Image (cartoon, rainbow, N blue to C red; front, top):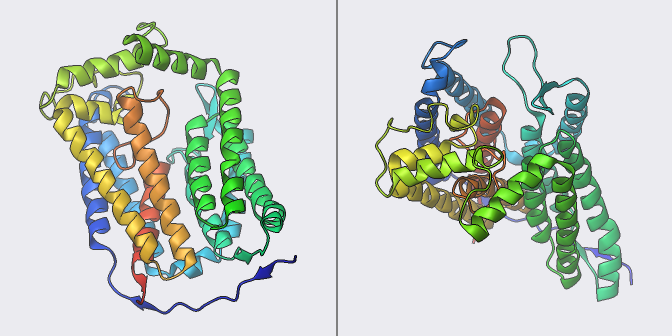
Amino acid sequence: MSSKRKPKRKVSSEHHSPDKSILIFMIGMAIFGAIMIYDASVYKANQPPFNNQFYFLTLQVGWLLFGGILGFFAYLIDYRKILKFSFPILIGVIILLILVLLVGQEVNGSKRWFQVGSLPQIQPAEFAKLAIIMYFASWFSNKEYSFSKFEDSFKKGFLKNLLPFVAILGIVALLILFEPDLGTAMIICLTAFIMFFVSGKDTAHRIGSLAVIPLAFVLGVVAIALEPYRMQRLQTFLNLIFKGEVADPRGSGYQMQQILIGIGSGGFWGKGFGQSRQRFGYLVENTAFTDSTFAVLLEELGLWGGALVVLSWVFFLWRGFKIALSAADKQGQFLATGITVWLACQAFLNMAANVGLIPLTGIPLPFLTYGGSSTIVTMIAFGLLLNVSKYTKNA
């Protein structure tokens, strides 16, 4: 039985002001994040070669402003016009991912950044997150087939949807794994999988979607086995979960040990803002204001402060999905879903790693992690999400 493409229905929509709660969340989290980054980085910033307590804060605010300008343009231009360029944007990002492996700056054995003179570093993998969401949002909105038989749906859906999806996602994920950057590859794969899962309603599509999970698990195991430091992190996590103690606290378990010391000393109410001890060089390298800012927050503001941040991201997740469900068309639905899943998963995984619920990863916490590429792409994503929220279906 041949497949039939369903005729497209024009959905009437209305144009109104954006979702104010998401806008308030973005502004509030950006300000709070900048304050926490300053607090967590002040010790490092006062050391040579910076010798300026506001060094990292100044850069972070600059990236927020630059990202905010780009996000404002992403908000102004109709997202449907922007998504018309999703394919060349994805191709451009893939080229950058290849180039960074060839000529990128190597830091601690990883090639993830471009460094041009004294300009800030650029991390292509951060932009790959949004690029692949935009591409799949455009693609899935046009992939609407109806099959009368399960066998036809499974066979033709496999060829027309699942294989191309796995191929495109696999290219991007493998390039990022070669850097190596397992955390970013995980976020991209998880976000893309959820977008693909909700893109079809028939049983065969759902079964095909679930078939991706064991494949991703196998690839994850291989990626961990190939890098000794990843295996050490996994062993540290398993030892903490099953034995209640950090293995090798002066070696591979040092970072986790210092994080737990800080969180434990913070207790419920915290030591008070600016009173963190762990930020004074106890946390590895620059992680106090990058990967482990949430741990510094828990030390200073305690459990109640951490709970407020978690609840804030739960609120964002709810509002993001509400925007997706109310979107004027499928492009808006998939775009809002992808952005919401990506940012929320990134936030929850970072916070979970900082309290020992999952192994430590290099996944940034949006707004509370210092970094140029991550901050800029996050601001652009919020601009697109607010863009989608301007257009909703009429009843």
